[in-house]
Amino acid sequence: MEVPGLDSSQMMLGGFLLDWSKTKTIFIIVFLILDIFLLTLFINKYNENQYDFLGEAKLEDKLKLENIKYDLPPSKEPESQPYINAITKAFTEEEIKELKGQSVEVLDTTTITSALKDSSYVISDKFKPEELNDFLAKNVLHGDSYSFWEIDEDQQRILYYQTYNGKTLLKNINGELAIYYNEDRKIVSYTQTLMTDFEEFPDKKSVITPLQALETLYDKEKLPSDSTVGTPEMGYYTLVPEAERQVLSPAWHFTVKKEGETDHLFVNAFEGNIIEFNNTEKELLE
Image (cartoon, rainbow, N blue to C red; front, side):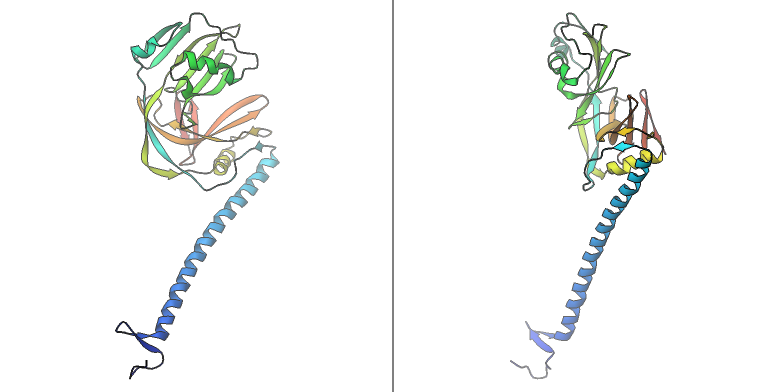
């Protein structure tokens, strides 16, 4: 129905006078702004993917030139991780009584030193971690909380570190299990520490990708020519190694093998700095 005094570009809606030509213009502008916003998101995402691709291609050429072989997990969206609080466990007398067939001492309530009275566990010349699964289950408190790290034939020691949510507490002396064997390769003793009461900080932060961590190691000349870099794994390192209560931060752990020797390299997964472990002390390199 025509309304007197209104031209063809105007109409009444709910008692309000609308100018249809202006309304169309507003809709066009709104949709244009939305299209620009979506296009910007797409371009930014495309540029990020291109940066990862070009960065990987560039790094791949450098590593190939120096005959450095490496294995990275498939690219995926950057993940977020929290800082973690944990404290050193104080072992109780009741827990120590559970350790049968052992002569046990506890130092400062936090470190178990145990000598086995009659051990039947003998490791092979080509040791595999699963050889000690039964020993860990039957002779070590919370033995399933540890993950194999390395065997040192010179010190006749097999080293394990505690894990949290499947991630290793990297070279943490307060979450360490050291198992010792004799000349006959029989298990004779061990020392143990354990972290407990883990609490995650509520806020999570984005971590750098394995590719970015690998590039940091290359740029800092930590990757020797003719070496092989294993698949990186994320773990946690402590900011204050000897404190009873520790703050743990995520880090990328790389193994680098050359001429039969294995080196462990670490990169802070938040900041991208290389972490140097020197016995129980750590130093961040620029």
